[in-house]
Image 1 (cartoon, rainbow, N blue to C red):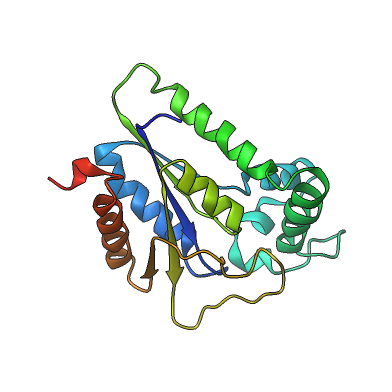
Image 2: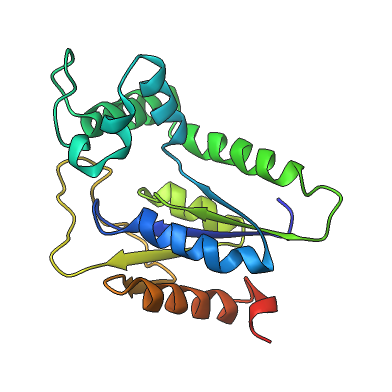
Length: 196
């Protein structure tokens, strides 16, 4: 991958605020290059949409925990089993890494002849091999925490990484969380243009 591609992966339990922090980071980083919020789970959501799961069950946190009419399971369970039991266990442990690389390539294609940086914010780093994949590409992994929100352990995607992240950030205050993440990124020369 190009050195102009900067990857920040967010990790943390469900409901901690990964997508909220990703959106705030995206707004801040847009002044320094192109930005994209990507998810390892995007292909899984598209599969669920293709079979008719209503968007509310895929996007609204309240509906994610309610059974889908006609299926009797929540969209969270549907996506977890598609992603893990089908994708990771039956096809390849690296299926979603492969899909993420394709998504990043699509985003980077528009910058092929430009000097602009592409800031990729991954809002759902849940497994050790996903974190390792980010590090191998020169990115950073940030664990988000918030009081009262913890890992449930109800599924393998709802457990703490066994690796130590590059930093742990309390995301109770979004602006402070974004500043903390950017400090780590600058310190690791991921985003040197922000340090001046």
